[in-house]
View 1 (cartoon, one colour):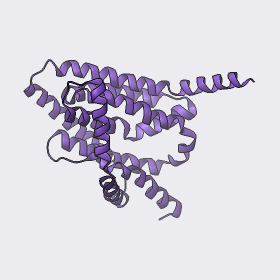
View 2 (view 1 turned 90 degrees about the vertical axis):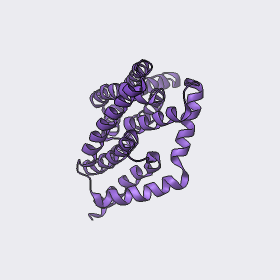
View 3 (view 1 turned 45 degrees about the horizontal axis):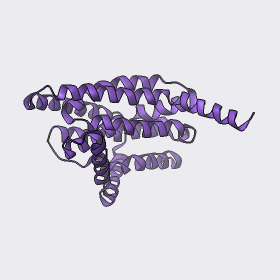
View 4 (view 1 turned 60 degrees about the horizontal axis):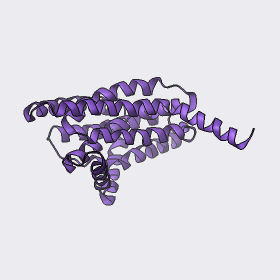
Length: 248
């Protein structure tokens, strides 16, 4: 087989495995655009009602994930240590700056803080969760797109209501879906050994806590710098692996 044909086969294989991620990315973009159209047609008091509704749905989603079976003995130190690491290196500030840079390109007339917050919240909501990991690995290893297609429908509807309250930053989060979900799909072979049922349970439960933080922000109950806790996602995998490996 010639080098050109080999590269062509590899490229086709990569694109075929990425189909589900492309669909998910488009679903978020379309949903965000529809939500943006609604945002421009409703008054502030109706938009506040939409935001409250989104906040409540996000709250319930986060609670259901948080209570799905994780161990608090692992989740608590992962959240605390991860939060300290994220605060020290200012992850949230960096993501908000990236969101502001996207705003200048995509929506220069929109308020910077609102755009960046919508981008950040939507990124966490769409990219943190067991469906993202399991679906992407199944797509990469088996060519099974069922989980990601289901997630695409959910994300699309959530993007509508989120963009109606948070603006164009939600559309920009489609780039995060493409990069993060696509990266997991392409690296599925290396990541697959980590996705045991016990580790996935811990990861999904901790992801629920991060989604709860988004809900607190949306409902104006407490301003939490959610992105600063992202290192906890890596720590919970490490802690769960150590527990299983050493049979603690």
